[in-house]
Amino acid sequence: MSGAVLRAQGLGKRYRGRWALSDCTLEVPEGRVVGLVGPNGAGKTTLLSLAAGLLTPTSGTIEVCGGRPGADRAQLAKVGFVAQDTPTYARLTVAEHLTLGARLIPSWDMRLARERVRRLGLPPDQRAGNLSGGQRAQLALTLAVAKRPRLLILDEPVAALDPLARREFLQELSDATAGREISVVHSSHLVSDVERVCDHVIVLVGSRVRVAGDVRGLLAAHHLVRAPHLDPAALPPGVHAVSADRTDRQTTLLVRADAPIDGHGWAVAPVGLEDLVLAYMSRSTPALEGHR
Amino acid sequence: MIWLAWRQFRTQAAVVFGATAVLAALLAATGPRLVHLYHAHGRAFLDELGGTESSLYLIGTFAVLFTPALVGTFWGAPLVTRELDAGTHRLAWTLTTRTRWLVTRLGVVGLAAMAATGLLSLAVTWWSDPIDAAIAENSGGPGPGVFLLPRMHFLIFDTRGVVAIGYAAFAFVLGVTIGVIVRRTIPAMAVLLVLFTVTQATMALGVRSHLLPPEHVTTRISSANLTLIDITGNLTVTIDKPGAWIVSQHTVNAAGQVVSPPSWVEKCPLQTRQGSHACFDRLTALGYRQLISYHPAGRFWTFQWEETAIYLALALLLGGFCTWWLRRLS
Image (tube, rainbow over the protein chains, first blue to last red):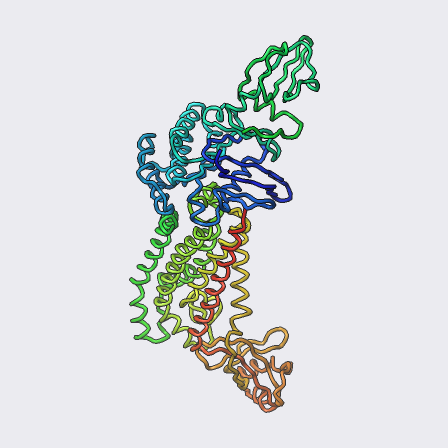
């Protein structure tokens, strides 16, 4: 595991007396495609806006690619940001958006941008205001990717898209980042979006990291356990209950285990990422230590 | 960044510069006749001007008067708020720094505002020049028809010369600044109009006359120069200074102290009309004089440049404040 591309320490942001994010501490590993998952109001958008330099912290610190977000042009060039609702200039054409990038960003890759626009079938002379939601999102992604950033931040880019456009966008995202020296943070309140593209997941609830880690590692360490009577408090050492679901006839636990847990007479089944994330989201207990 | 600033602005610029060009063409077509008439007939030519000239005189004057406010309202106030409404600031501010983004746009749109207003004001000034000269020669009395006021008068001063350039720059930056603080377009426009109007009124009625120390003249009060006795008994007289701006006037006694004129003065004009000069003669014999503070007409351009400099300096200061505020906006 290399260093962290984003590091937040006790980070807080207050709007008009209300804390949108408070005392948030997390790290985003470099070179990964990270899904930031959490319910609405968890502070995802605030966190990512702080990372993009659109907001300044009320308390704590945040460091992105080794610098203060939005500090100067060099820092801006390191981070590609696709904001929520993928804003573009409605009166500017697709081609003009590319010109804009070329004029403002020193590291701008015009060949990559043109190639993407052509492949996606975005009409260059079309005004962005006349594009469909999916096309607009693709244009916004193109602008962020053609910067050749070290870190690509996407804040719920597909939230407003229909399922087909959503799938196409996520596919494009995978293609755009595959085989590149680029880290990605992608927020969503839908686990299925994250599952499709991410290899690392961070679950954020109420500004706190509930669980964070490599997707495969998390799936390997978590199991669904079923038995007629199971007391979550009386599990063997190294096995921790994340959530419990009881009926009259049997108890189902989602457990985290550091070692194989066969041989206790339980029915053990693998767990899906969605169930895993939801189990951590709905826990009322404090965060477990993250898995790497 | 200049490219983006211009690209976002070019439609509005085309509309305003187009309108300015149309008005300038109208003035250019009708202006030479005014010059010719003035040379031929002197100040009496005002009486020969018809509806077309009257309309153009009013249109030109009001156009220059309102352009700075319009610039502030429709170019200044929405400059940032429109981006905040559309969310496009989240795109722009990840492509370039806020400071560069704002300073460039302030520069491009601000210079365009100054250029448009300046062209308009200079065209109107040139066109109105024979009329303004003729009005000034009336020595304080109003001219005929709509051609009432000399260019030193506060209602006309704003619409001649270079001062409108300063107003436009100031109104524009003020609009942007209010937009950055209020963050909503319509309230920002409303606040701008109120603040700008208050600033203009304060400058015209309170500050301007103090930019230079006024000159003073003491004159005897006669039937020839007395124009008004108001209900408190104070007198208004005219002075033989064409186009001068009278700031204040008081009646003084033989010792030079400011006093209320004797109440019997109100009977003087009637007695004079009946053929007796005794009343005014008595006033003079008792030592009553009128002390008048005024700015001569020749100071017009000094006032113009001073006020333009003040407004440009205010615009620069506001621009700095606005940039600072935007940087800490989040």
